[in-house]
Length: 73
Image 1 (cartoon, rainbow, N blue to C red):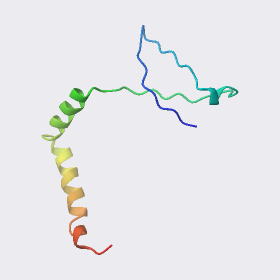
Image 2 (image 1 turned 45 degrees about the horizontal axis):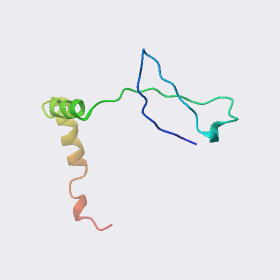
Image 3 (image 1 turned 135 degrees about the vertical axis):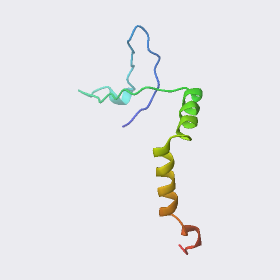
Image 4 (image 1 turned 180 degrees about the horizontal axis):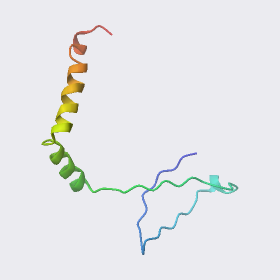
């Protein structure tokens, strides 16, 4: 079973109450990742729109899929 939840950090700690389905488990996997606000994500997207490497990647993907809309699937 996989459960995804965002927790608030307090004093560099989090408390995780496990669901009942985990009751007899001897171990669980915990993965930590940073969360970003919508404003922060939009800021990164705006920066990417001027990044030469990002723009080259987009061009490469576009050329890979040229003509796809004309194919019969």
